[in-house]
Image (cartoon, rainbow over all chains, first blue to last red; front, side):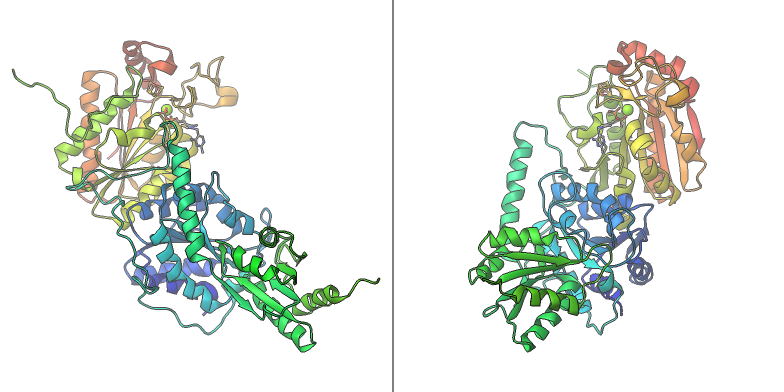
Length: 353
Length: 244
Ligand SMILES: Cc1ncc(C[n+]2csc(CCOP(=O)(O)OP(=O)(O)O)c2C)c(N)n1
Ligand code: SF4
Ligand SMILES: [Mg+2]
């Protein structure tokens, strides 16, 4: 199975009630797969007229308490930003998959990590966050789906899966996590008593993002921020390897992290002590873990398929304790093990006295 | 003493924020009366637009959502597809439905979504200060047509209902005017029919356009606004059933 299909099936197994989407490469497998499987499961599939419509269909289904998702690639995700801001403001749970491609503009259909800023810093208007995952294998792409739905429900927040064209298209053996509708991750999910189900024998429910009373939106923002602090505390996930004795620590996520890991292993074989930190959640960002690793003064090398976006968060976490160096390739260029090794070797050259 | 008129239960007892003579208040009452007469209060979900009616949930005592400007038909699609047993309606102005949300309404009709759409055509953007809407009349003075709307450069009034009526997925389209007691009674009958179709699981979208006074930005008294609808607006937006 390719990553796109594995993720789609995992979403169905996670209890997805409704999928809405508009075709775009490199994630067309998702729309095609969903059109077949969702009808087999007698669940909802709609090919929308645009990504603007798709995200608002998600908004509608989410407002009634259903598990719902959409998927797209970079240009389509840009169109969804209005909707994502409204989803965040109205605190509606949903999952949005971005199989990133080269940008800006129409760019190309090659894999990229150019939408990091858009995903973790907001993207739409207003002060908000979505939980953002950066899976690095087809298996993880699938495994993250039930978790993403559960966390979205638990915190009433949109969850974004930030994948790239390689992960979407790559074929790997994968075990789909099944029957995870409830509590796979041992979460006790709150009841959706806010959902719009018809005010039959109860008071009217309202899902909104507008408050005109003085100070009301200010307060709403403080409430959202309090929730974000909880998520930062409870849900930050990252993988660390060979970090303790490392002179160089590579920070990379997604498919880049796999390439970086290989380079780190080869560097070790050459006697250079390289470790890796791989953020699994990009928001919340593993700042604490990186800050702690920075205490031992390794050099940080951040590798991305972009001109350097996540590197800004690494710098914030390192806070000047030790140098942070960036290397990456934008617009569909894929970093190679050799190139990363070359970078590592450069970093080991001692300056002449 | 005999009660000859009382507020229908679904219309909340809430001080109005609408201007005197505004059509939104009339439209709200009609929709609430229809909901109560059809006995669907407990299974109805309403969608408020961005426009003067953005706070519609302060008046309608049903489950309601407020959505981005123009996106109501897409949101309604997500709701109705996942909750076919519920009655879903959107309430949208002419900026919401006929300008920024044109794609969403056309495609909801095109897909034959089982929805009821209430379309308030007051020929202006009321909420933002009375700017030109696609439905603004030729010669009409608005905040952005200070010399009156000219066809050359600003286009002709857009007849969205006529556009929608040609789509097979739109099963019922009628235009009514909130411009006299008799017209208002007709409008109520049309709204009722639009909801009944959804209740009876009719396969498609029903829409009632209501020509609605905006005395504030038409710079007219409420009675003159009603006469303006009867004598002028109906020439461009003829009343009656367009489909179904
Ligand atoms: C994306 C976006 N653009 C613009 C606006 C500003 N805006 C609010 S209401 C409105 C027009 C409303 O006009 P209409 O739909 O005719 O409703 P009315 O107030 O006349 O009932 C506009 C342009 C907005 N809220 N969102
Ligand atoms: S501005 Fe016009 S549409 Fe808005 S409340 Fe006043 S009269 Fe009604
Ligand atoms: Mg208007």
